[in-house]
Length: 394
Ligand code: GLA
Image 1 (cartoon, rainbow, N blue to C red):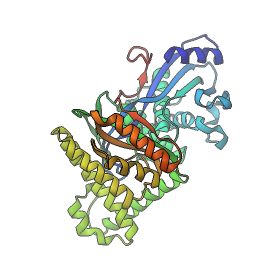
Image 2: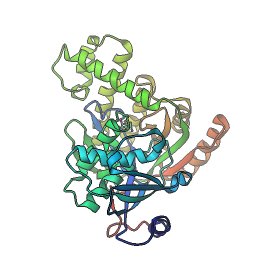
Image 3: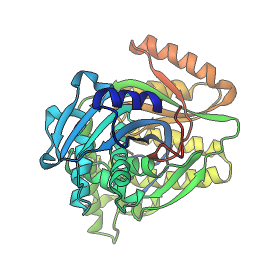
Image 4: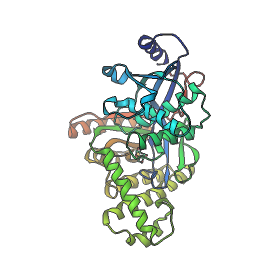
């Protein structure tokens, strides 16, 4: 992979100079969904799928971008003097946004770059292709220009650029997982303090399987921002009757005792999800530490029900995939993962049932929905970095 990318880079931009190769992974979240902007816990892991980047510093302020996923766009040329989002700039608004955000946070990018990108995360699948591109840009800038910036700060800068430059009001989970991932571990992150802990994902005799519904409903970003606003309003209503900083501060009992302060039924459901899902994430990690994979699976199932009924971010195709999984032998747990309104499910499936899981759900889904789903048996990988010296992608 690395060799092919460098070859392509040289074809497009010429062979001279110091050419470096980087990778930033996508992520799958095991539990703790829509909690990361509510001061709650999340439990994602980095995938071995992600975004590769090849880059070289320039002597002027020019920025040249080329993506092998969007060959038809050719080289997109811009400059450090014009770090503004343009609709027609497409995917390049992500790396540009990160360069802009670096500047805002005191890391002025001193020179232009030639950049080639290739991603193998299916687009729009909810496995964080955009966050991986942001984190990838962050590690390129750090390495090429020698910025003294930590990986957590790179994650925060990626989130900042997505919020302020690209207009999606996302939380910190995706960028954090891409920057801080660790092979064979999931990250138990408290999003209110950014304290985190790596938990080994030891699923004796079972595997994590992602199913991509290949459906992405429109208005994802606006629906996402709506959910966030609803939670913020619910929090303000609760703060009139109790002293809390975030919905993540509440236990289920405290929520039940005070929920009437929330003036609308819809907002009560949204807040209920945020509170209960945070508690489920905490309990799920405890269960995993005790090797109680069955309890982990039950909490995943409950998470799905809550995302479907209270948070209302699922959709027919995803509910079908989850229902099919729940009704199959050898499935320990299954739920929607990521932002929602399409995208992927994540399931824990016993080793001996994986083939049948893929075949039966694959057939039934195609019959009922009219197109194929895609399946990935997950390998948990490391976080982002320069490829030389630590990974050889082959
Ligand atoms: C998207 C956002 C994340 C998080 C998830 C839902 O992936 O980018 O910050 O809110 O949705 O858990």
